[in-house]
Image 1 (spheres, rainbow, N blue to C red):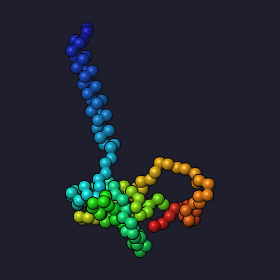
Image 2 (image 1 turned 90 degrees about the horizontal axis):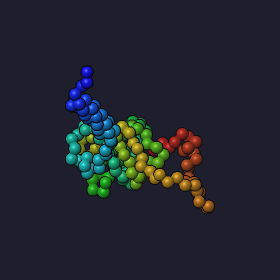
Image 3 (image 1 turned 90 degrees about the vertical axis):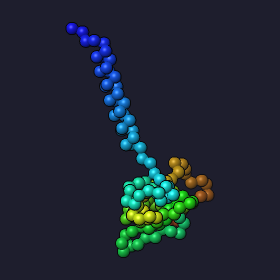
Image 4 (image 1 turned 180 degrees about the vertical axis):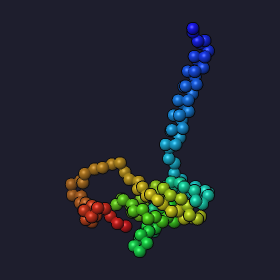
Length: 147
């Protein structure tokens, strides 16, 4: 006994539709966006986000007693105070771009659970006559820099 073509076609359409929905949901949840300090100011307090900004020169402070790193990030328009107990990599410094995963604690303040330092994808050997930055070997030998 043969099935009608309409039923077979309907089954194929339903399976294809389910596959498309699964792919769309997977891709949507895999995309991670970040906001700038100006965009963060318009969001609700306590909302978990990824914040992108430039570390404001002279704002980095390390409190040994509480093990809290505090600094400011800016997008050129708005500045946000950031605090974190997470230690950044040795690339963290004034003026570098960072992506911070965390949440707002109050307007203008952000608690970062993770600090990701933006860096160049260009890795080049030293040119003739260039020297390595002072203290780099000591920091690498000690397992990384402490702020």
